[in-house]
Length: 193
Image (cartoon, rainbow, N blue to C red; front, side, top):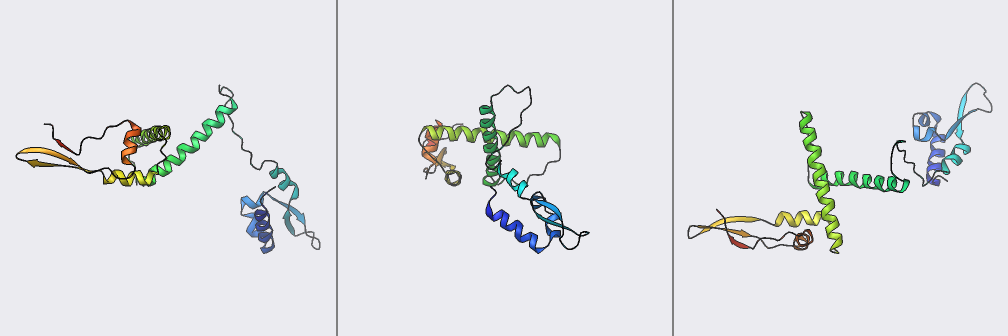
């Protein structure tokens, strides 16, 4: 059955006046036109119990339509759909976490480049997430970005020789690099010419 609060909201809107409901397609689908008791010429609307019952049959059910030529099982389709939801969530979070919005493009090549870079970032993030899970690490992406931002290098000269200094790793960075299989360079090392 539809959530009682939805039905109550529909009933409350109907009492306010039918004009507010007719413009709202979410409500309109649950109404039926009836003849008003006293005035046969004036149309009125009421909640259609039959439409509510029809709708209740599909509560919690979603339908995926595939091309007839698709060579995947229904389970594979559901799993790919869940991956799609994850990709959409990753795009949203990548754009907000990496502060890449808004981006305006002036050519098709720029659009393709943006989509490619975004997709590459998502693939890399998914791979890093898989490696972290394998290592038993459950990182928060905001924390990782903050800790990576603190990881810095500077080149100085000592007796005419360039030396690179790296800050200490903080937070989750060390374990993330380890899970990714990346060795951090030494904190102090000679610069290579």
